Structures are given as structure tokens and as C-alpha cells.
Image (tube, rainbow, N blue to C red; front, side, top):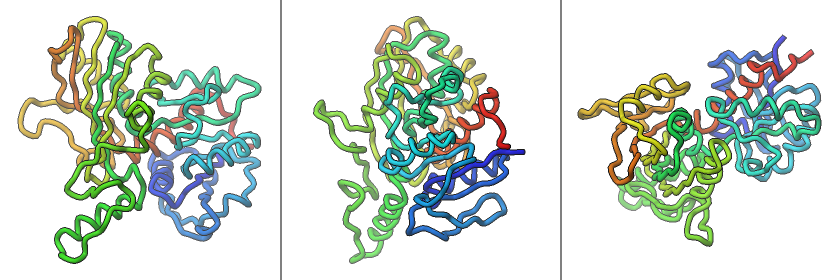
Length: 346
């Protein structure tokens, strides 16, 4: 017997990727139920070689469902996740709604999957597990093994984030603006973004906070501390770039002790979920186009940062719809099963 899995937000970019990842990784399912809002009832989505029709979230009974993969945004998650969890179903939420709740674990399996042991042992748990922000997820996968070896004191990160992180409307806006620049009279005014995204970069993701940082930048700070170590100091600049899929990050790290480039490469080559592509030659690195569709978090351009006593700089790239969202969500479910924290459905 396998598990009964519901996917909420199944018609969105991430929801569709969740269905693809479940099928591709041969997740042990007996039944997959795609759920969406009322206006999407009957919409067809793919699961492996099957075509499934979406059902209405509001009228669905979660009794007997083992996992709910939630990708419907913070508003629906705030309303529905506690109700679904109360039915005994484990909700793995991809929104920011529960990430900073002290009663909800924030999980990247390669980094802190062990946290699930204590959480699942709690008799009064909420049955909600949070998935981190896409830019945080790929960064901590690469940095955690280095932190274990030499203790990271400070992280300075600049992100180059694709438009798919802002949803289908954002991808459409990039496409139409790009097309419009080549067809006079068909220019498309910004709607999803604050400025033109085609042939441009925008140093703002999410809203501004009082200290001048954006909410996206704050998320990276708060989530890195919660997932890896609250003592690490983090500063981030998050930038939207005219790329459809795949986030890239320029990361500078300061350690408590010396970490040589050779040692870092050796550690990262053995790290789960990481692939090192680091040749000091033209094209000897990975870009978002190459990472799109892959499960790995790629690390390139590892080099000494001579501006601090024990510093390294590196380039980190991953598919934001996969490791930054759908893949990590499914991996959390897999981790619960692998650690014998779930009972098989009757």
C-alpha cells in the first residue's frame, strides 16, 4: 500500500512541478488528488502518463489523506493548512505563511531533516511543515556542509532571480515585453513588476521594509538563521532578472577558521544535492539555463575572498521551481517516510 497525496494549487507553476516530481521520483502513491480553486474545477493536469482533473479545495474531505502538498499562496494556506492538519494529514506548505512560526519546522532535508524526528514526536503538533524561500533553499544546501566543517560567521549574498519565482503572470510579462521590443507599437507596460523586466534588472523583490531591505531579503536572513544557525550574520540584495527559470547567487562567506578552495571543493563534491562544476576557463561554470529542469544545486567559481581573514566566494545556481519549491516539498515527504515517521495508509 502506498500513500494518498493531495496537491493544492495544482494548476500553478509549482503545483504542476510537484505532480511531475512525484511521478519522476516514483513517490509511493496509491492516489494523487489535484486540488484548486472553484474556477479551476475540471482543469486537466498531468501526473506521469495519467491526466487528472482538478477538484474543488473547498468541498474536499481530507480524511484519510496522508500528505497535502500546498502551493496556493499564503492566504489560502493560512485558512486551510490548520484545518487540513487537524484531519491528521501532513501539510507541506510552499508559501511564506508558516516559515517563521516557532511551532512549525522549516526544512531543507539535506540540511536539517533530522528536525522532523522531534516534531513528529509531539502529541500536539500542527501537522504543518514549511518549505523555505527558493533563494534560501539552494544557498543553504551549498553552505551547510561548509558550515559544519569551519563554522560560517557571515554571509553576503546577491541574488539573480528568475521571473518564474513570481508566477505565470510574471513569465508572460517578460515574454510579451521581449516580443514587444521587436514589434513597434506592441510595447507592454509593467503590471507584475515595478519596472520593465525585459532587457533590464530590478533590485526589488517583494515590498520594502523600514530598514531599507525588501521582504525577500529579510526572508533570506531569517530563514538561513532558522535552518542553519541563528548566530550567522546575513545580508542580502535580491534582484529580479530577465530569465524565465533558474535562480543564481553570488555568495561571499566568512568562516571562523581557514577554509581553502581545495577543501571547499572536496567537501562540496561529497555533499548531498550538490554538484560542483568549477573549471577556471571560459564556460567552466553553470548558468540558470543549464540548471533548469535539474534537481541539483550547482556550485561554481569557488575562490578566495581576500577582503576578510577566512573568506570564500562562490556562484550557486538551481532551478527555483524544483529545489526552490516542488522538489524540496516532495523531498520533505520522502524524508518523513525514510525516517519511519509516517504510517502507511490503511
